[in-house]
Length: 423
Ligand SMILES: [Zn+2]
Image 1 (cartoon, rainbow, N blue to C red):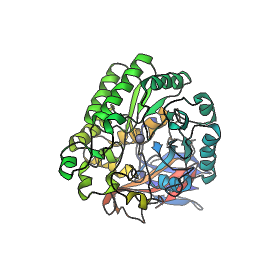
Image 2: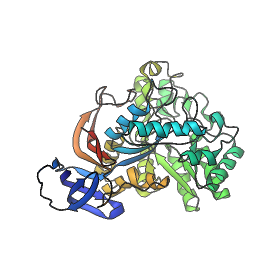
Image 3: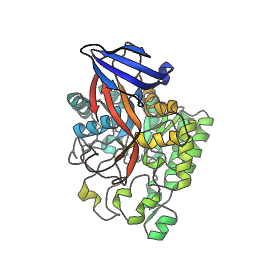
Image 4: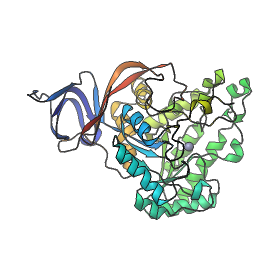
């Protein structure tokens, strides 16, 4: 038996907010009351001045498994996830080989269950081999457990294929998610086209590369009546386009990453490859736009786009090093900062980190309720910690945040009735 004492409990799904004790017996929540007395044989967790909320759901991670497990694998990725307060993650299909076939979809699910720390779900590829030409057997992949479809890492450049993909996925009760980037516009760009790229002489990547694809996908969604999800939205204009599409009644949803809510293209000032990510880090104005959009509901939720790369890969020249940075352990402190700066309240934090992404894939959101299997996270909103090689639990350490301090630390994560992470 476990008794969580004196925590500030928040669960918008059950209109629960306030100081409560939570009793867990055999993994199931049996009591939520203002004051439960500890008794013999009961493990007590002191949650004084800590927040207790449903654990987080991340619809966008790269665990590199199968194929590039020197960067990350399902086990190391799961460890990073639970340390970040997450108990559900969706793995992107840009593995080697790509997740475009039933046995590969099954592999991710079964390996995730074997590791057992959290719910590891796969997204299937939209096109075979993610080559953008031939649709996968989405119905079969969905039956095998694919929770949605994306060629992430690459866009679906061909608008006709994208339209067919939207119709197919929508007709089977699923959806496609697009990595919005017009490759003809982005070319070999590295940094957001603006003052920093110009000053440093870095190959510029114009924001239209993202904006035009977001607009195309919104138009296709409006015309087909089918859903589309915009991955890692990052530009001010793209946010405006999504707002317009939503006003038009389109079934468009969008996610934003922690790094696009927090870091600007100034990270390139030391010419470091860890600042390279796709879409690129942008300006203060773009950050401001994504923050308000997340608070107001134009952006539906946070997804980390956790993208591990090995040290030797990130040591290469800016032109050739692969884009991407870690995210799972930094999302909470970054979104928490938006609460502290009054962009949003704690209820909205739980919605964008847990409830909304869960609902998007038809998963019942984790809940703090009598009769539920314990699946919640306890975090200290005031604890400051340093991002370093030891505190990062991923195999890879690629993040511009190395050496910096963040405030907000996960102390416990419960999954399937058990403690899967303890700080
Ligand atoms: Zn992407």
